[in-house]
Amino acid sequence: MNPITVFLTAACVAIGAALGAIGYLVPGIAFVLVAIVIASALKMANTWQKFVILRAGKLRGVKGPGLFLIIPVIDNVVAVIDERIQTAAFGAEAALTKDTVPVNVDAIIFWFVHDSQKAALNITSYREAIDRVAQTSLREMIGSSMLSALLSERSAADELLRVEIARKTADWGISVKSVEIRDVAIPEALQDAMSRQAQAEREKEARVILGSAEAAIAGKFVEAAKTYADHPAALQLRAMNIIYETTKERGATILIPTSMVDSMNPVVALALAGEQSAPQKENGPLPLPIRPQQQNPISSMATSTKTIPS
Image (cartoon, rainbow, N blue to C red; front, side, top):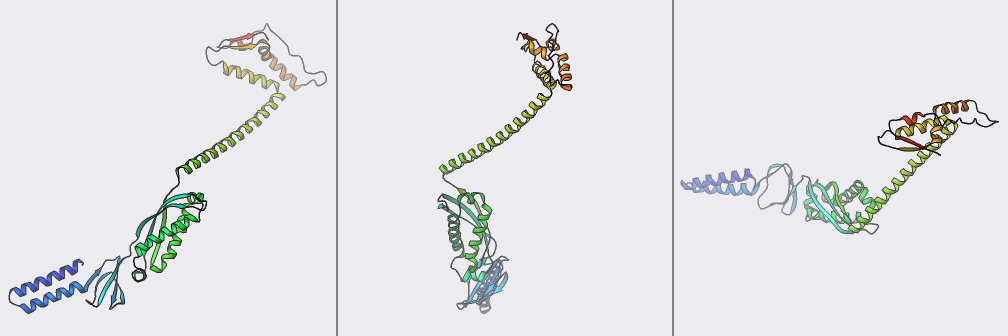
């Protein structure tokens, strides 16, 4: 009973009792009867509610929201329908996918009543029916889907499930707003196998990337070798730079053959550059001058460098 009906009923009863107390028995009884009629005839529906009314067993109409009157005894409110969006959780345990993998799936459905008359008259309990239909449709969807699609294409599975449930509940005046799969649980043994498979795929990709990098580096080495072959002076300068970079750390001792030291002599490097500019194709390359008595600048670096006879 709504607050307005309670207030009016209580007021009429109070007035009737007061009149009876002061000797006006008939008016007092009349007010009590009015209170009984108000309590059974005056109804109020909230803005989200609809009252389905039968008169003598036949559909009288759907009332609400607001205040309305019914005829006591003849009219009967058979259902009060809440048209707000409702939620229901449902799931499927040990359901087999298309590739025969048992999974446990939990989902939630958002629905509302768009036709109160159908929801009250076409089915006994629309709430229980929605739960049963949702579970059945979920199992059907799992059975027609591969495990990989169920895990990766979650949005498509949600939409497919929503359309199927909405099709089955349309005659009951129910609209399905959305369906969301919350969790897909697979056996632990299968989880380990999938984890190993994913790790193997990552290792494969890493090896492919490493091989591509090594191929690119090898190509650069080939280009550098061709450049050094065409320009020997550049090779000598590169060798001197490598030795210089190596001797940066204090206390390092490097043993270099005397022939290598002499070959890195700046005078020899200049001679090689001149030879490159004027090659002697017929008589062969010019002999390299050897000056063992000359002090090479490499030996005067900050760190100690020793030469050994070749």
